Image 1 (cartoon, rainbow, N blue to C red):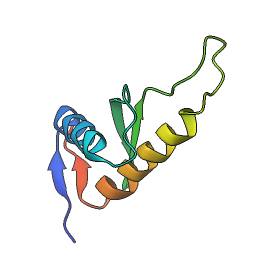
Image 2 (image 1 turned 90 degrees about the horizontal axis):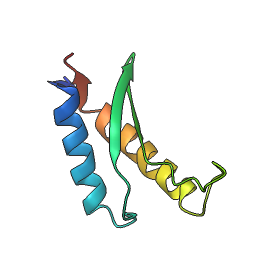
Image 3 (image 1 turned 180 degrees about the vertical axis):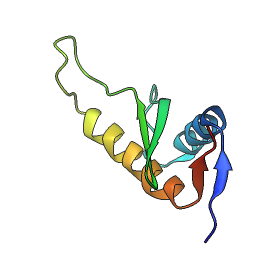
Image 4 (image 1 turned 30 degrees about the horizontal axis):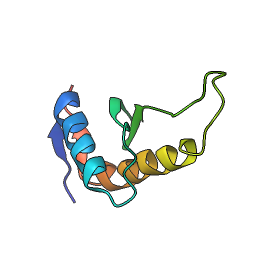
Length: 81
């Protein structure tokens, strides 16, 4: 399957739209960065850490959502920049 080239900003916008539509959406979750290593896209954003920078109950949920984006979008897109 041929992957579609997409800009970082367009991919961030798409990822945030998909997050808002996901059944496990967490208010406040947002992709802020995307990078690519080989064929894998990596998404970074809110990690839901407490004041001591320790994980909260939402941290693993956020990690799983970012991982879901990685699997879903790495199959379809490659960064154009």
